[in-house]
Length: 596
Image 1 (cartoon, rainbow, N blue to C red):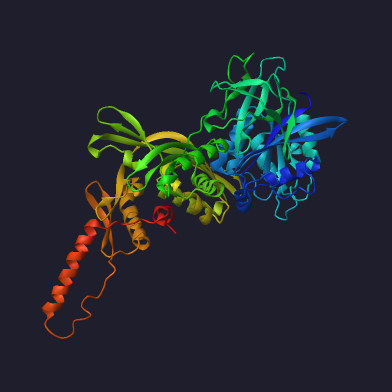
Image 2 (cartoon, rainbow, N blue to C red):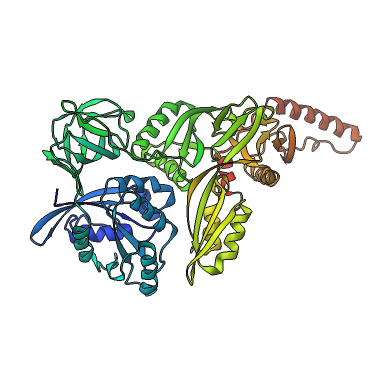
C-alpha cells in the first residue's frame, strides 16, 4: 500500500487537463509511441470532435523513483459544469488532486467549485500552473490568485506545459512526496467502492472499483451490498491502456470486475462489493445523490421502438450515473421517458450518444425544471412536466427552484453581464475584485431562466471570457402560469411550458411566429394559438395551399365565381375537421433557439 498513489486532475474547462494527462502517460511509458494520439484517454468520438472530456477516465501508471517502483492511479475528469457529478465521484475515489490553472486565463469559476469539492473530501492539493509556454502567460499574476485561493507558498506552485512536457517530472515527484498512500486494513472483510461502470456487449457489465479494505481474488464469490445480488468474480484486473487481468487485488488498488452481469439495474454506482462468506458489516458511504437540474421528455420517432429505447437508456445510465429517467406518455408523441439532466449540454450529449451508440432516432421535448406545487387541500408534490399540473382552481401556490450563480469576468463586461442577469430575474448579492482585471459576481436567480440560452448569451457578450458556475439554493414562491400551444384548437402537450407571468406574452408570441415558419402548409388554414387557461394571448395562421377554382370562369356573372368559391370553402371546412396537423421535430427544438 505504501507504493500506491490515487489522484485525479481537476480544473476549469479547457485548461489543459487531458493534454497534461497525455504527458504523464508518456513520461511513465504507460502508452507506446505507436498507440499514442492526442487526448489519448478521451475514447469517445464526441469527446474528440468537441475537444471536451465528457467521462472521467481511470488509468494505472507505473513509475520508478528513488529506486522504488510506485503504482499511480490517475483519473482525468471533465471540466464543464454539466459533468460535475463525474468530478465528485472521481474525487471520492482519490487521496490527492492536481489543481490545473491556465497561466493565460487564471482562476475560473469551475476551478473554485472543483477545489471546494476536493477540500470537502480532505484531498491533498498540488497546484500546477499550465500553458507556461504560451506568449500570453501571466505567471506572476496567476500565482498571486492561487496563493490567495489555496493559502500555499509561491514556490509550491509547479510551472508546467502540457504541450512541451515541461514540469512533468516535478509533478510525478510531488505526487509521490505529497499524496498520502491509501488507508485501509488488508486483513478486514472486503469493502470495494464502485465508482463507474460500462456495458460491453460480449462480457456484460464491467464495474470499476476502489478497494478500501480487504482483498479480492479471481473466482471469489462476491455480492453487491445494496442490491444483495451474488456473483462470481470471473475476471478482475487493473485499467491500463487496455484492461489487464490480475489474479489478486489488494487494499488501495483501483481495478475492474467482470462477473457476467447482463441487467443494467443490478449495478449501481456508489454500491459496495464484498465477499459472500465473510461480508463487511456496512456499506461505504457512497456519493451524494445526483440532483437533476433540467427535465425533458425523450420519445422514439417510431412508437414500436419504445422497449428498445428503454434498454438503450438503461445501458447509457450505467456509463453516466447522472442520467435519471421515468416512463411517461404524451397525447402528441405517444410513450416515452421523462429524463433528468444536469444541464443543456448534458441533454445534447445524451441525445447524440443515443443516436451514435444505439442508433436510436428520438424526439426531445422542451426542457424545463421541476416545480413544487401546493394545492388547496394542503397536498404538496413535484411537477416535472406542465401537463402534470392540476387545474388552476386547485393550486394554492407554485414554488420554483433557485440557484446561486457565480460569474468571474473582466471588468469591461461587467455592465452587460449585470444587465443579462437582472433581465433573467436575478438578484445581485455581491461583487468582489479578485485582482485589478478580474471580478467575481454572485447572483441568486431562478433555475428556469438559465435553462435555455443563458450560457450562450453570457459567452457571446463577454467574448468568451466570462466563466460561470452554479449550485441549487432551494425553492421560492413564483408567479407562474401554464402556457398552452394550440393547433386548430387542439393542445400540443409536448410544447406547453410553465413560465413566469411577465414573460408569458412575449414567449407565446415568439413561439407562434416560429411555429408558423416550421409547420408545413396544408389544404386548410392552421390556427396556431398561445393560451393561458381559456385566454388566447397570441395567434398566427398558416394559410392554406390554394387552388384557383375560378380559373375556368371567364366573363359572365360574378355569382358563378362566388358559387365555386363557396363550394371550395365548405370542402376546406370539412377537411379542417378531419385533417391532421403533423408537427415536425424541428418545431420541438425551435423553442431552444428562439433568440437566434
